[in-house]
Length: 292
Ligand SMILES: C[S@@+](CC[C@H](N)C(=O)[O-])C[C@H]1O[C@@H](n2cnc3c(N)ncnc32)[C@H](O)[C@@H]1O
Image (cartoon, rainbow, N blue to C red):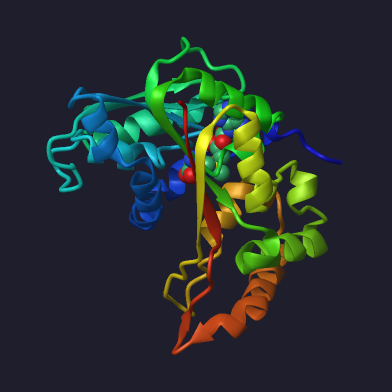
């Protein structure tokens, strides 16, 4: 039986909160591509140095909202502030518990320029033309109607504003997810399809660029990335991603099934071990566009 996506995420907020701080350094690294794609300096100059309003959609517990907030000078503990640029980030997610987790993390880091608000990105509670930047990392593909969400992103952007979406490349280019899907499917009978998740529907760059164009965007560009972390082979490095996508199901799995899952994940990903370290690439695209 397939679970609707909205239900799935409501059961995963505790997993996202649990892993967020440990994953933050890796998140900050890949978020850099989103910040670059929005050209914050150029945008700030075109607004005569006025503070920038950023809307982050499907923020989960804070990425890339925190990276934008730091770049805009919201954290006195961070050196990520871009000189002469300021602004505010409105971080949103359809799951209120994700927003609460995000707000708590922002308070802990004393990030002052971020507000968390529950919102469905298919029906945004904001007026037309209210933001300079709309960002969304690994979120748009989980909407019931992603094209409606793209039109909403376009609607709330000011003329000259920019949108940036980070999306997964196809499953075949993401060996971690391919292994997870096959192994959980074999052992528990639940992969992405059965969990109601379709992470790869924006994997085809040309099709995704066409979808942005159909939503009204111009100046559409795409870059592709495939970084590989270097993680000791003794670490079950798949655990965070597996928990954050399937935690609600894994909580009910027996110890024997969990043992079999971990052994099969190690075995399947062992070709990626070099010098005692897993080096498994993750492949994603960054799509950026303007509202004219
Ligand atoms: C893979 S997570 C990404 C979270 C975060 N952007 C990150 O990269 O760490 C997907 C997020 O999309 C949210 N989501 C799913 N459908 C949504 C919708 N229609 N509107 C807003 N958020 C949604 C989920 O609650 C979940 O937090």
